[in-house]
Image (spheres, rainbow, N blue to C red):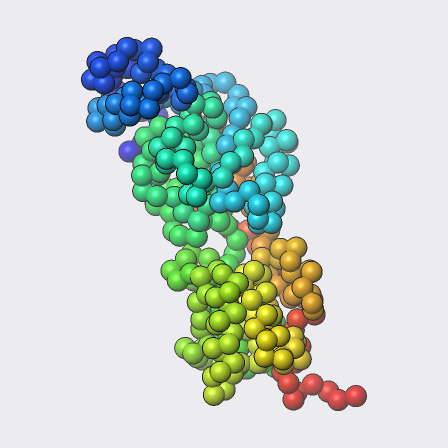
Length: 350
């Protein structure tokens, strides 16, 4: 495979060879390569299979000698507030760089075949791609490398392959600051609700939580560590499980604001109040954190800045440069609001 920025590409079969293999004319094969719509489905299938079988390299339609003008941004959803913050950061940085941006949702759930979605990236003539998806498949990584398309990942959930450039937040430090904040109020029974198991960000946040407890002379309790798959309803169930323990926690660090809202719901269902009966700290600082009642104390990760940084790195790669490191982390910051207080029974009386 050839990484973005590599200088040499092994010569492959010509388009004429592909056309002969598929039993079509060269202009028809060219239409398929360039993403044209005026090709019969069966013909497209034959040409695509011939392209794969022969290892034809579809050259990017941009010329690295000219100034790039268009980039693709692929997000997991066009409706979430998370994606909105990312796109805002990309928009500002793209304006400064004089770039146009095409935004689309990833192929999952769109009903489009994965190969067709990828082919459209080159058909548009984009000079590079920003991905804000949980992860890419091995086939997608291979396709991007094969076509020498520069790309950067924004906050990937799973560890990308070696050499892939990504931008994220200082998740470990965020977990430390959230837990230290609760320790500072006098909490000693502190739980954590993380997202999916084995994710990069969730693992780092839980590691920061454990580190802060250890620095305070406390060991983490296995029954206080829960996983909710980044889902509000699952976080709600986890909270009920924590409340049913013989010694329930007095505070919980929740590894996303969305899951923290599920914690709020579970506590309300038990007739408990935040922070009177349990303190809650989230992670992200999405708009929902300010709208919650009480407003949610949370760790702010700079989504807009992460996206802008990713675009600047992509621009360097589009001009043939290679970043010194593959992982860039931006600092997080604790935002204190009304969802945290001293444990019940340890507050001063009036």
